[in-house]
Length: 86
Image (cartoon, rainbow, N blue to C red):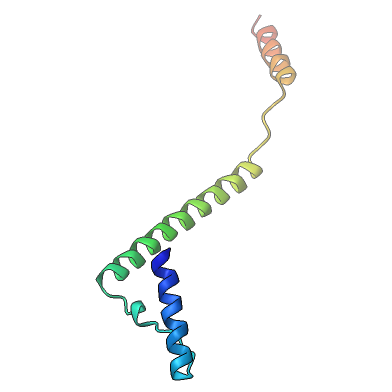
């Protein structure tokens, strides 16, 4: 946290000295560690999005399934089947 604070302080000092207030974004040049972190973040986002899509699809398919029969109706069918067998 201290290094971020120092970076902003250095940027503020340079801004006042040069009378131009454009931030130094040279650290965003996707050098090796930043490119790796970006790929990891992208992969995690992709896995998260796929998981969310599967959850949404399973909820929708569950909504459209037939409702299970009531236990009383199943019992009546089973008894009717037994009576018909005898």
